[in-house]
Image (cartoon, rainbow, N blue to C red):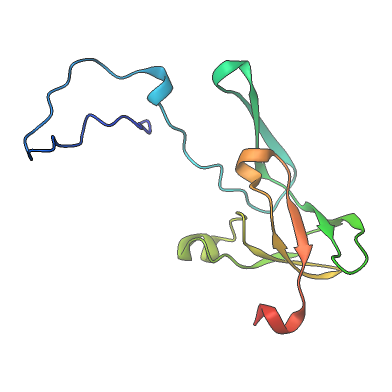
Length: 132
């Protein structure tokens, strides 16, 4: 089953039912989320509208972590996913999305990129007292 972002399911302003005047279109088609998890690196490249390419991270064990105090960025291994406030189910399964808290050798970090959209996991170190 596919994801569809059309609006023919909505009602008229009067409250009546809208009748379909045409079939579904390719540009109304949506996609299922990538749901990035920890593991051996696996990416998927998808052609988008206008011939653009979108890289989705399906699995990865490395993240580019920035230290805000020194301003330096380093590629480090992700030990585990601590918390994901986006979704309770993602939290339980260890899915990495924007805003997820990950554990690295340098300390706890918050993911700032969208791995399913940009194809890379970027994160910023956070202080220990904020993360609790």
